[in-house]
Image (cartoon, rainbow, N blue to C red; front, side, top):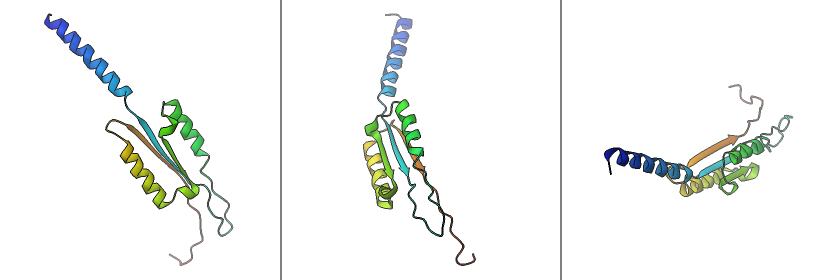
Length: 116
């Protein structure tokens, strides 16, 4: 086999190998959305749950499997819930995986109660 044929073979092998590696990437996502805030001081509810369907739709269009999308909303989005979800995401992910983390929430306006 000539040097040119070997070089073509090596390039073809690398191309095919890299293509399989890219296809083997797993896409994972953690979506955190908090929109159910208690009404305090007369302020209306603030809602960011409407972001979830749009983000999920975009992920699905990018071939992220529904089983690889973890969703935490409202009461499930506690400190413990978020830490556990991150731990699970880390444990399930491998080198080369694509990971998306999206947080959607809003604060609540309150009156200054101490003049600071």
